Amino acid sequence: MLGLLVIIVVSWLLLHFIENESIDVLGINPNGKRFVEFIVGFLFIILITLLTIYIESVLLSVDWKMKKRVKLQLVF
Image (cartoon, rainbow, N blue to C red; front, side, top):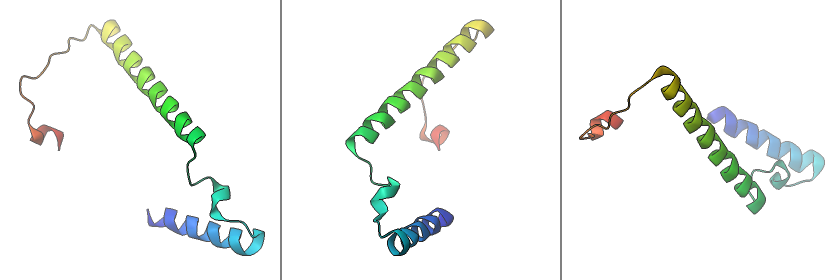
């Protein structure tokens, strides 16, 4: 995480002093189009994952059962 921050700061310094540009040219600040592309891509990955789970379940004859009571300890 710290390395990513260092890379962003170094990029900003190089852009500021050499190219006289702001950090916005790197595309860090999302605009509406990029947000929509992110959501569409995220939904596409969800669809592919669910389709893969379904196909594996059918091919391997996996039976899914709901747990009657889910405890917080199972999640964390």
